[in-house]
Image (cartoon, rainbow, N blue to C red):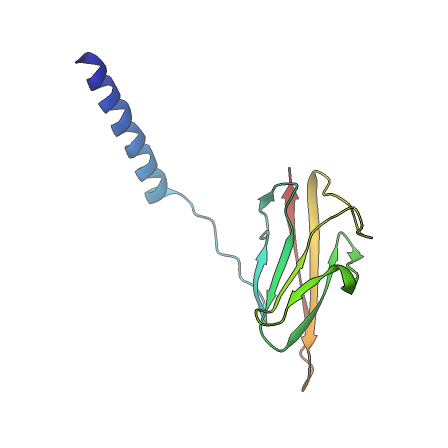
Length: 131
């Protein structure tokens, strides 16, 4: 009987800690993305695992050039899904940029412009951490 009371007390404490963390947690500020950038992953300030890839989601009608740590990613290494506007890149052994992430901070810069019509150029840069 005594063990049941201990387990019930521990369970109630765990539930209370989780509830308080959700209720009073900072949650951080939402990232404000400029213009046609709808989402980026990993996000600014995020910590990522070494197997992560870079995703940039642009509004329809835009094209992007992406660089990592100052090195432009060759277009043939980018995967682009036109229907969703998502650009994806991941380090791999055949890459000209890098074959794997090194631990530490990495800076991504995306520059965009419209595919047709009036020019609407812009850029956005953010840093995330691997490891």
